[in-house]
Length: 360
Image (tube, rainbow, N blue to C red; front, side, top):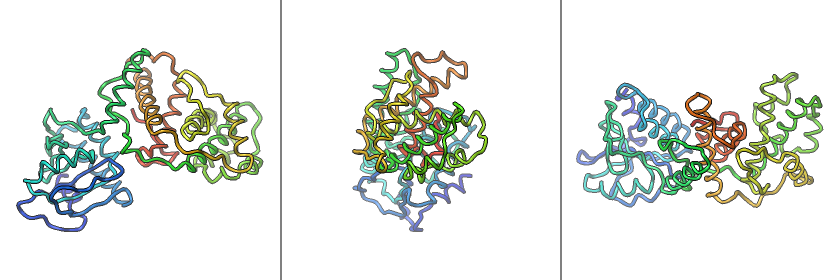
């Protein structure tokens, strides 16, 4: 396995470093890679525009999880999450004398580094995990400063509401890591969700809506339907569970409408969204085409909502497993839909709507 991974991590351009230099593979999570302001030679570089990078990262995650006894430890979990957020892979040749400046650069890039000895190291060069599965207890998987600060604030806010989370949970993405859907795509997703949730509501109430009439009323929304949503609209007799699931999509719709500035309110997690008011507003805005958005809300506001939703969802799942009490003043279905919508918005794991996951 180690030999195979070393081959995977070899320089994409095939350049050979000098014998006195270190060959280092860097995995950075920031959207814009900082300038490489230290002595180095680039052996290869790629970002998410390279279709092979995702498969490479999946292989690297497999390597990390297979070291030693393969037990899921805190370091392995956080390292796995880091690799899932990587946006840049750079293979470099660096002289030992340049390591201090290289280390400062990896901090700005929010990167971990793979060495040829099979170890994965943090920004200070400490071993997170080596080829045998061991590591330095002082090593830390890096996170952007704003993400760490947000996590601390949200944990305190939730605790004051009687919702106690685990401090071992990672932060959500930071401002420099977030990859946003375009405002036009968010508006399209909002209107697609309006179609499927209204259709599900009609089935539930025994008044199924006519899909072709909906198409005539909202033609611009139909290209944004996901494959699963299209299948739902075409099904003769969708099962009850699916109808219920699609009916909950009003909550995803409300979250994305809020994020896109189409709706002013993001209700408390113990409140169902104002379906009638929101639907009427969206249909009014779509009277002569798709609604127009002033743009996405402030990054801080959306990431705060994501962090709070992520931590609350963790508590709900722990309660479902019988490991703690259900959190007060929370509707689980609302949290599930918000988490799905927000993960889609920040391109979590690069997944499209039907494939979005909400791990906690």
